[in-house]
Each structure stands twice: as structure tokens, then as C-alpha cells.
Length: 330
Ligand SMILES: [Mg+2]
Image 1 (cartoon, rainbow, N blue to C red):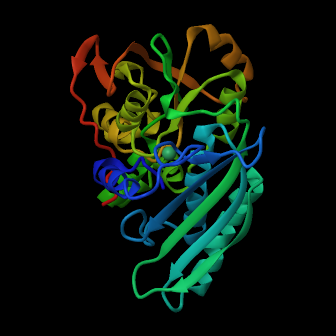
Image 2 (tube, helix red, strand yellow):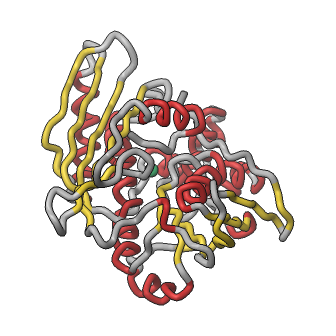
């Protein structure tokens, strides 16, 4: 169960979790993935994510192949946020009668990303539905038990990093919603739409961070503001974010302006970059471990221990209010 989907879903997840027996060991609801040790020295990491037509995607805007890629990518991103390696996936789809060709294309997209990432699809379920198309992927991987990335690993003095650029996927979605064909045909729209339809899970980065000794990360499914709050709450710390340092997508700035691009980076989501904290003493080890072509930006700092957590945003050195809520699924 993914606990990072906006305020409404977050409340519901807490109410549902309260009905279950507490775990005797391992991690359950509340991180990017669940984790447990089937035997000493091994850690299994598991996550699942569901995409529903009309809520998470529209078939007028995406190909079935891209949808398959994305359905697997969002799960792989949760493993990346834990520093885990993929594994094996179960894929369940609910289809209208007559969508068999679409299902094949969807599987082509799943298979393409599975091949690249070393994920094996080993089963699932296919059912008919009178309603919208639903795609659910459940994914199991493994991590080193001593080197797991957690939301609760941030400590005062750590620097706050984000990988890549942020806001591109939400900008791509904004262009699709606006539906201006002249803008959609601009060359700057191409990488924004690609970021939205074919997100790249940061598995190599997550593994490198875990290996270098980093202990705190989350993937950006709901926007930088909401994810920073998740880290702050889980870690019991106060985090300061310098908005002038956000690595905005250049194409989003070009097509939507810097204010809108920044808003989308903070609250739009679906970037599937990693937001993580690093003690200063570990910076050289992190730099040495980085995969090629990974860009990192320092966007803030963990300033203090604080029960319940807090995030403060600054622009040009002055505090500024940013609504926490990211994408709300329902
Ligand atoms: Mg996540």
C-alpha cells in the first residue's frame, strides 16, 4: 500500500492500517515499500501500485505501451527509494470486453522496462470489468538488511538533495489538460510528455546511495513539498527547503513560466526522482558512488530535531507558505 498519495488517501490508509494486527518484525505501512527478513542476512522489499483510467491516466493521452511502462516504473521507483533491487512482479488488469489488443500493447511496455531493469513478471490476474481500465502491479525485490533507505533516517545537520530535475512530468500533464495543439507541438513539449508517460525509476541511484551509507530517501510521486513533509514527519525533524535551488525543468519554465514550473515541481508530482538527506561527513562517499549522468542538487538542510516534523520553505532568504498537499488520488 503506497502511503504517499495526498492527504485524503493518507488519512484513509491510517484508518485501514488501524484495523490490522501490528507487525512483530519488519516494516509495514508507512515507508515506500514493506520489508521483512525471511532469513538472517536477507531483506525482502515489496510494494504495489494501482493505476485507474480516468483517475491516473486517460487513454486519449497515453499509448497502452507507455501505460504498461509507467505501471511498472512507479513500483520500481518505490524499490529505488528503499535502495532495493527488483525482483519479480505480478500484474493484474481489469479490462473491458474487446480490449485484448490493448492488453498486449500494455504488456509490451511492461516487458520493455522489465527487460531493462532485470525485473521478471511471474504472474497476475486478468478480469473483465464494466468500468474503467485498471492496472495493478505488485513488485517484490531485495535489499541489504544493513543498507536500507528509510523515510525516517534524516538527522539534524544533514543536507537535503534531489536528483535530476523536478516538475517535468506535471508540466507534461498540464500541457495535455490544456490541450493546446500548438503548444503540444513545440519541441520543448517532447521531454515533458516523455517524463509524464515514461518515468525513469532511479534504481541505480537508490542502490548507490544505500551502498554509500545514506539512510534516508523517498521517491517523488506527489511533489517535493509533500515528500519533504513525509521525511520530516517520519524522521521527527525540521527541514528547510530553499526554493531558489529547486532544479526546475528548463522546458517547463520555457513553456509555462518559472512560477508555474516551480508550483508544479512542489505540488505536481510524478517525477519519480529521489529526495534524500546526507550527513556532510558522507558527501565524498556519495559523490564517489554516484552512477554516471546523475545530477544532484542540494535544496535544503535538516535544521533540528522536532517532534511531529516540520518543513519550512524559503525564497530569496525569506520564509514562504507552500501548501503541503500534492496530487490527491481521490
Ligand atoms: Mg513512494
